[in-house]
Length: 176
Image (cartoon, rainbow, N blue to C red; front, side, top):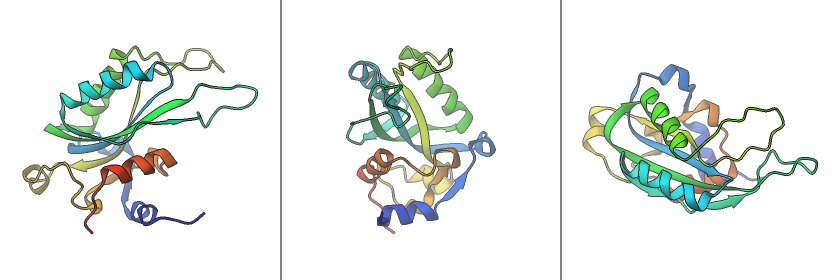
């Protein structure tokens, strides 16, 4: 399998565990949305809620098989979409994580309670990449990626899944 220029750029980005960034103030995030149950209902609700937090750009929504499905335990396909969110007001990573968890709840997200249960996931919101609040980043808020080197990858989400890479590529206009 050959690597694209995007793969090579991603490999050089700083990767941090979310635990050490909890108090950091953020101005932009790249998110992965996913739903395997009534996506046509819940994705628009999530997008509308995210738009209330700032300016959003959306990748194409893709339908993908659940990579954890097996012949013995088939699972419904997911609809996945990446979102670039430029926040109206900087927020800490911890605040954003709490906001996204509440948004998932507003979409009737129920956490798995029984082992080996096939989960119906109405909405899953994962933070893939963040941009920290700096004087420069706060003054130059634009809905383009000025430079990939400004971004920090959430280590718990890397390496990205194929649909996440495609979504990020759609959202980016890297200049370096």
